[in-house]
Amino acid sequence: MIQSFITGIDISHQHIRAVVIKPIKNTCKLVRCYQMPLDNHILTDNDRLNYQKIVKKLEELRKALPLFSRKVCLSIPDNMLITKQLQLDSDLNQEECQFVIKQTLSKHSVIEIDELYFDFEVLPSESQNHTASRYQVYAARKHDIDGLMSACSRAGLTSLLINPYSSNLIQLLRYALHHYRDKNWLLIGLNGSCLAMCFESKQHGSVYHQVEVGKEISAISDGLRSLFLHIQLLKITPKGIWLTGEASLDSVQVMKSLSEATFPCIDLPLVKLAKCQNQLSLPRECFHAFGLALSGANWLGYFDGI
Image: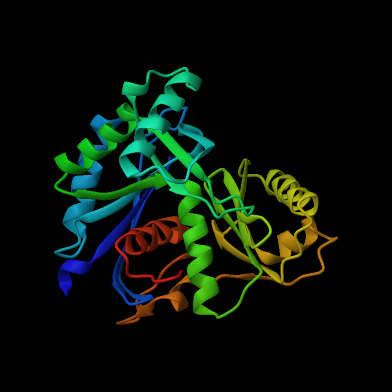
């Protein structure tokens, strides 16, 4: 159905990038990819949106998107997110969990609990103790979420999902591993000044680490070495590295920077991950918007086990 279109929108300092997909059972079709340059006043220095100015850009984007692609997924930077792990009684129901989590957050957060939205998920058990469960709790300021949702609504778009940047990179990795029927690959992406990597294993679960880098090659190389040190500290041995994002991140540079690495390093061909029609392209710079669209499809239940 046409109504199943999902649009991932990545808003950065210099661009709005949008990827529209039509999700199918455990896969998707690429419908449209769109990039729009921005001026320097859309985002503030602390990565918060200038909501008044973003509305006009989102309206312009909406007019360029296909019909029935108004359901959009967006993200907030991870530094705008509060995360905490809690251990709670396994016998608590959903409503009781929400109450206990809210009470715990109110005791440990410097932000008033009424100023926060929060969500949580049950984590895999690490022991045979069946009387307690571990929960990963996420919280964000209502001001940031409401502002983003309001900007979408005023532009004629419907916000389907808003999640942290890291979740979308991890979703892209999971989708690529499923597509290639492989495992133990590590994904590194460069989005503006953010260089991030993610990896999944039974031992560590989902691993995400990011560093801020400049546009200079030397700064990116330093960031890569920092990520590689993190890999070594965790004693992770990936089968290989997939690269995506800005063109300034390439395999030759990575292998020079990580001369100790003994595994291959290749570009992740985004366009091959989706069933494309009419010679559509999906530039690597749109990886985050693609990851957002995949996150939306996963949240709606199109990806079983991905």
